[in-house]
Length: 424
Ligand SMILES: [Zn+2]
Image (cartoon, rainbow, N blue to C red; front, side):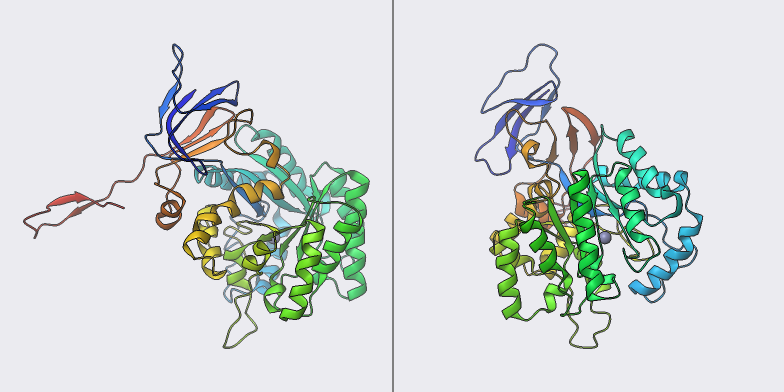
């Protein structure tokens, strides 16, 4: 395949991209197509690597209203609804819903996804479903799976053993939810258990960490310290870390140094946390978002995730990372002009780094030919107009094509413009 006239993000000028055997073989100013070669003329549109959704729960998706709607919008009503819905889970049910949402993600240009899966279900139905699905969809999307003890490791019967059973099924990463444990001692013990399992089975770590507005919730320091002490550089992720938004600045300043030294990844799930956090505040109401701008300024890798899509914990979502980014840059004050340009990294290369996929990610010769063609002028234009990808190409093969929308306004009163297409 030859892609002509591509505006590759991060490079000046227009480029032709030759793809052979599923890899980028040549990127040059002008390349000629061989006989019979498939040609796509990008006509100056942007070419970027596919989006990365670094945090989602595919076992929960599309259960909103089952068996009842969350009327308060709170996490606690969500948990009580999920404990009812959970009783009716089957492998087929989980696979069907997850597969459905994967189509939404693929349609929006995502090709790399890290999903969590509950480790505390009898029979590990959801883990079995997602592990099967991972193999079935690998030509469309990379699925990474984290064993996630939703109800805690030490405040749920056999939580520690159930977590290990799920890890042994062949997932990619081990999770924990330290702020949900009953005591400070169990918080620390649950992290030791998580890291011990990761070392024993050679897995990554992704912890649901300090997802609360409680400024005393400081599991993050232990997560980072373990990452540093065990030399698991780049392999450890703390998701949410919303309590960081409520820490005092003296503690946050010290913490930034610990985080940088540990080479930990942080994931911000902006749509979910702006929805769930601040629920116990009257006014002024905190945003409940981690310190994305400060983390980035301290050279800490930050990416973003959809987290929840139409389920008891969150009612909306269509699996579109541009939705998440849009919310994220607003609530994190990343709306300076250059910050908007740079923010696309949060759902592309930073996500690939979180997933430990950065070595084979990006539009560069020799790498696997995964890319999006987006009809936008530049990154600012892409984000401002929320421009959806026209093509998603994976291993050099088109896996998604979209007809760009064309809107006509019928201006019957005007002598100048009668019917016209809305321009950007
Ligand atoms: Zn989550």
